[in-house]
Image 1 (cartoon, rainbow, N blue to C red):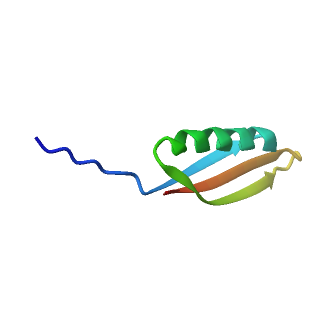
Image 2: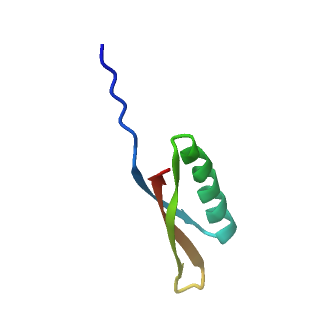
Length: 67
């Protein structure tokens, strides 16, 4: 019987929230989850969008890589 383990080497995840604190919390939670599968943060990109009503919208892309 052969076992073959394929490890995830790269993973890109997208996050969105209505406020910065919530966005940070979502990212921090996912960092902890990905530590369990031996992935660390490689890079983070984020944006803020303000709509016509003045409401802010935060988004981020986090690239995880194998440690």
